[in-house]
Structures are given as C-alpha cells and as structure tokens.
Length: 117
Image (tube, rainbow, N blue to C red; front, side, top):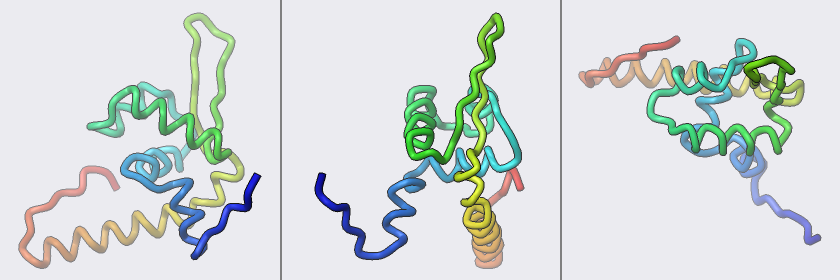
C-alpha cells in the first residue's frame, strides 16, 4: 500500500467530513442519537439513498456509530462515536460562522432565514 500524502492538514479533515451532506449530518448528531427517519426529516432535500451512503462513509471513518436494537420492528440509531465527538468544536465553529455569515447577508440586504439554531 502506498503512503497517502496530504499537502495541508485540512485535506485530511475534508476527506472525512467534506461534501454537501456530511457536515449537516454531523451537526444533527451533536446532541445525541437519532434514528434514520428523524435524521431524514431534519435534513430536507437529502434522499434516503444519499443519507444511507453518507452515514456508511462516516461509520467507516469511525466518526459515527450505528446501534441496532434487537426489537420487532428493528430499530437503528446513529450517534457520534467518541472519535466523532472530537469534531464537536469544529462543528460548533462552523455553525457559529454560519450564523455570522447569515447576519452579514441580512446586513447587506439579502433575504435569508435560519430555521434551526
């Protein structure tokens, strides 16, 4: 196996949490375990297929853990792993910057709305 080379450390971060959906999924998991159906409701616009794919990728990176309960009907929950919890400050910073950006847009006369805080 050849050595993976990163030119700058943020490349390694973005390889794991980059893209349109992963940061949104991670922000929604910051406050505890969530069932897939609830996660899909929290993220309008994501398809079931995309949600499943992104969760599998985050699970394979050990950022998210999947818990299956031996119940009928079967129940599954996703949460941040202990390793994934180490991203909490990063995700908090991204959310804080997003709020600042929304306020800047408003101050510049743009019509924007933040539904969840």
